[in-house]
Length: 288
Image 1 (cartoon, rainbow, N blue to C red):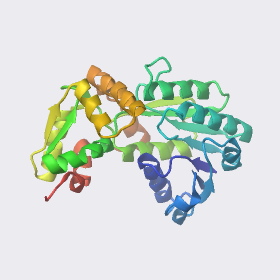
Image 2 (image 1 turned 120 degrees about the vertical axis):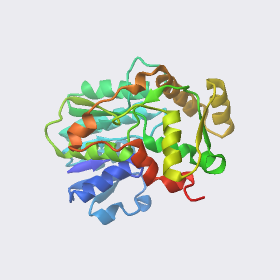
Image 3 (image 1 turned 45 degrees about the vertical axis):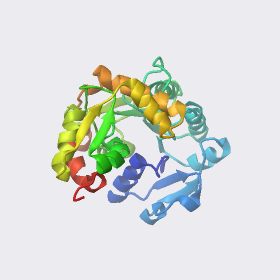
Image 4 (image 1 turned 30 degrees about the vertical axis):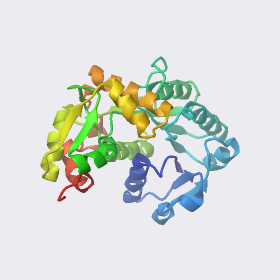
């Protein structure tokens, strides 16, 4: 039995599609509210109630599970929530945890996603459980957060200058995750998942322009402008702080590293940003 957490999110939803497409039925999906599970049960998967904040519900969700995907909600409580999940997995005798982590995860990093994932990675490694860790770079799908300004103004704004990142499509992350969940050769491995090329946001704007038939521009802004705009948009301060750490990683050039993990693990070339732009062109105003 495979247990999926985070299955109602973007990446988790893509993992569901991958496993369903492969004909897997030995899958249990953990959701907080089974009434909001949508079509998950239509794939033939078992849908069970479970909450990262409720240890007893985790025990029930993990009963009889051989391999579990650890994909918690991205918020400041994620370290504690992952700790509860790891403890419950040990009690249940789970064979292996596949943790979807983050690029640059490091327990010594500044407060934010890299630190939170790094702390949980360290706990998982020390747990005595078998483990596999996936560290995807910046998601191409994160550009959808700028879709409104692109549709309305033909512009998006970021505070990283001309730095580059090897954006990865969540569909590739899901394909890797499904492979790792269903294969036995990945115990004790940490995989850094990237696209095949490192792009600047100017490159991104050009590819979006080509896909939509519109002129789309990237405007560099200062970190101070980014923070003020994010807070004005209603984002909570903790999230703005965490996004600032991500922007610093991007701006430093550290996110430009390219690996072949997606190609090696899926046996196909990773999706390019041009592929992503074409597939999501309508969201960015194609034909408007």
